[in-house]
Length: 420
Image 1 (tube, helix red, strand yellow):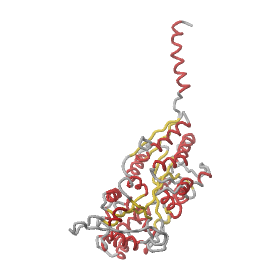
Image 2: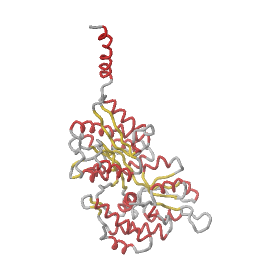
Image 3: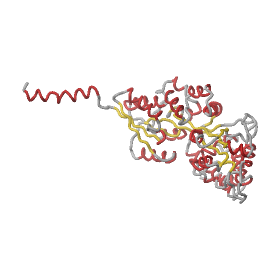
C-alpha cells in the first residue's frame, strides 16, 4: 500500500464507523396536530411519548406539523393541506369528524390492525363515533366533557347554597340560581354580574353548547340520518334560552354571539357566576379563583342528566404497508395507557382509556373523578355529518329569531324547518 493510500484510510473508516453508530434515518413518520398537542417543552408529558417512540426504533424520525389557531381554524388548515396534496401520515382531529374524513378514501381502516384487548379498553361511546359501516378509522386520544362551573365566592357572598344530588337538579333550579346570582351593583339598571352564560357564536361553537341541553331535553341523534328534530326537545331548549335571556334576564342579551373565550373570561373576571364550558378549562380556571363543578341538568327533576362529550382522535392515512406499519406503532403509543396517565398527571385533557378513568375514580381525585364518572355513566357523543350541520343551523336560526323577539318558539321552528 502506498503511503498516500495509508493516510487516506481513516477517511474511509470514519464514515463507516459513523454509519454503524448513528444509522441514517430510513423512515420518517409525519403527524399533524393542533398547537396544544405539540410535543414542546410546555407539553412535557406529550413530548415524553414522542421520545419513547423514537427510542424504540433508531431508524425512525418524527416530523411534526403543528397548526395554530382555534379548533375550527385547525380543521380548515388541515383540510386545505390534504386537498393541496401535502401528505401527512397521522393527524389528531376532532372525533366527531372522523367519519366524514373516512369518506375521502384516504384513511387507513384500523378494524383488523388494532389488538382486540386494546380495543376493549376504550370507552365505547367514543370508539363508536370513529366507526363507519363497522369499520374503525380513528383511535380516541383525549376527551372534553361539557359541565357547568360556578363561582363559589359569589355564591357565598350572596348567601346562595347549592349542593348537587342526583334527582334534585333540573332547569328550573338552574334558572332560580341564575336569577339570584344576577347583580346590578350600582343600581344603574345595567347588570354587573350575570347569573349564567352559554356561548353560541358560529356553528362550530354553537353545536358544542347546544347539544348538552338538547340531549338533556330528550333529543337524540342518529348518525345515519342526521339530527332527529324532536320538536319538544328543541322547544324546551329554546324556551330555556328565552327564559334566561329575555324573561329572567339572568344571561347576557348577546348570548347568540358569545364565544367560548368570552365565557372563560367572564368566569375568571367575575362577570359570570355560572357558565357552561368544557372540562379542560378546569385546570386553568382553578388558578384564577374558587370554582365548583355541576353536571348539565335535565329539563325535569328526577330525569337523568346526559353529558355531552367532545374529543380528539388519532387517524392514519393509508400510505402503503411499510409506512402504515410505522404509523400504527406511533398511533398505538400515542393512545397507550402510559400516554394517558402522563397527560392526567400534567392535567392537560381528560384521558379516554377505561383503565385510567377507573383508576382515577378509585383514587378519588377531584374534579377528575367527577368528569370520569360523567363519562363512564352517561356520556353521549355523535358523528358529525353535513346533514347534522344543516339541521343544527336551522335550530341556531330558530333560537336567534326567538331571542330577537321576531317569532315565538313554535313559529320560529316552523320558519326554519324547511331551510337549507
